[in-house]
Length: 274
Image (cartoon, rainbow, N blue to C red; front, side):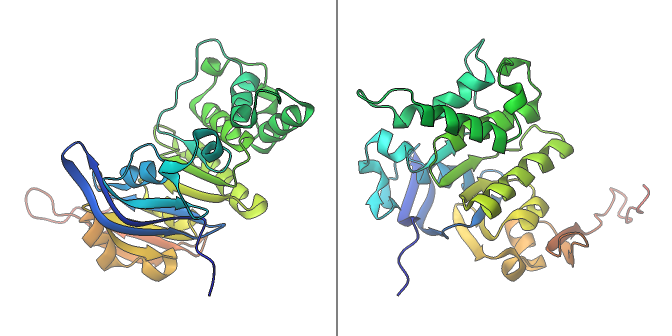
């Protein structure tokens, strides 16, 4: 029998105060996968990611990392094994790129082990891997949105966790910077063996980059598995309420969602050029 995945959860009930978001969720994040969680707004995808990262405590059930209940792990130990890039992170005023990335080494600092040459090397390697080394002396608040997002990924890499969770990492970026950040994530997964878990809004992006997809609807998991195996027109309509056709992306060979024409207010179909 195969050993359990490093990150998984059993029978999760997730809630904010008295408002229940999800019940009886069983989730397995395949090791060394690029897992993407998708679903309509308010379906519970970011809530699930927060439970997997211990940002919220389940009302019931358990999220496990390496066989341990993550709510019982010391904070620094968890941070040495699991990295998180939250939605819209904010940097302190006047901090440079190098200083922000260096904060990723904090979980590895101890009373008798302060900054070392290894820390310096890891910070430099993290900035190199994300293409921000030449920005090391720049202030973070001077950077473009795409550059800042790469810096945050570099800080997460400096933690050297092996598992990285990203909550809507391309929100507010233009299309070119969205692809730039997703390409970077794919490189981390394919070339460095990271297990990535990301929440994305764009289903076509998810199909192109994910090796494992979790589709959520109304707080429940509607389907999970490789995109080519689970993404169908019926699933997209069930999860997003969007009639569509599924074709093969000519560039990536992955499923491509093509929305059906919607009727105009007069009842006539819109033409492609209208």
